[in-house]
Picture 1 (cartoon, rainbow, N blue to C red):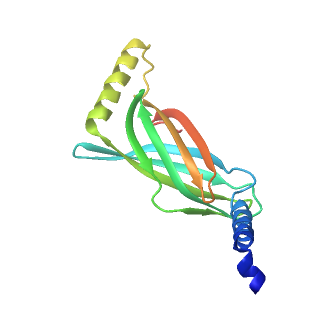
Picture 2 (picture 1 turned 30 degrees about the vertical axis):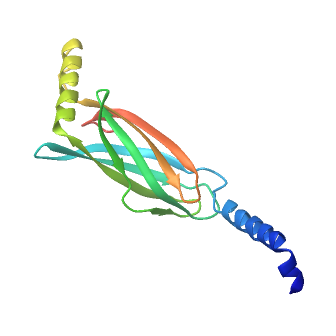
Picture 3 (picture 1 turned 45 degrees about the vertical axis):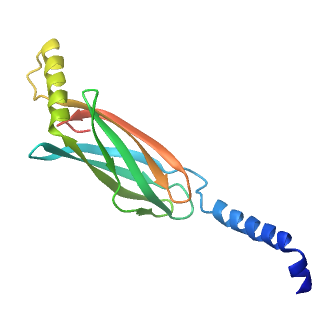
Length: 162
């Protein structure tokens, strides 16, 4: 026991090295794949519009991972309208996938500006006779427990299969 007291720095170094080795095993060897499945306008309440973003997370690793953060910025017709975050962590099984998503709320002023831009775009384009649509883009990052961060993005048209 006396040697342990004499070399506290050595014991501290061993403890730190062990802790760092344990933390390194928490980071997945391969990043998960994040696929944006869809973006939809859920409802309009008062001066707010509520959107849902659905993603599928695929895990190529030999052990389960946890997605503990999912943040995204939604733009419509080039106008940033909303930001959203994952509400609860998502467990993704080894060599499996899981569905996740987040809700984003936008002020009606942003949505109306985006609609006005869409109308301008529609007036400049040849009429197709189809239903009107709003072009969206989504940029975000998924955080994996253990420190990895995976970007994702998607663009398409609201109101059409995206």
